[in-house]
Image (cartoon, rainbow, N blue to C red; front, side, top):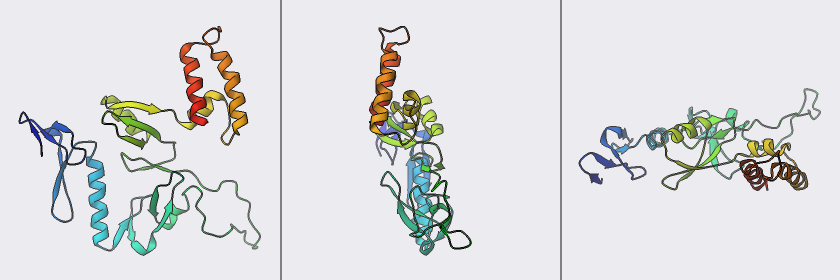
Length: 220
């Protein structure tokens, strides 16, 4: 590990130099240890848990974090393409997942479904599933991650966030369109909002103008 002035060492995860007293030691199942900064420590501990359960013929569910025999877990793809392994309970909550059948009522007739699945998103920082839309965050070391509001706020307070992309829910609120709005509806809402937000109008300002453009770019 790199040493600077005898007071800083490199994190075994990201390689950044940090104060020695901020490094945490994480033991891996094979007896090896790694020293990580506060940002990388949760990732290292999660990896250690997964390695341990794999060695015992069990694996951690990516949804509830409980361990199950590997035969009880099923892999499925999230809307963003990430593949996760989930237990039967968590699998039912994966957006768009289907067990290949149709929900039926007691008499065998197809049942009406008002909601296919409740969206749950996996934060790349705390590895917890949340129902809120994740933030696309770029950090000072040029890493981009999808994280929950709590983790985003923690990194912002530490001053390591360089950019946070507007979320789709925020963009829809700014333009005043519903989820699932067509391109034509989004375009019409943008043209209406951008006129009112123009700095030359009493109702507008540069910041409002920029916000409306950013919202449109996010949705389009």
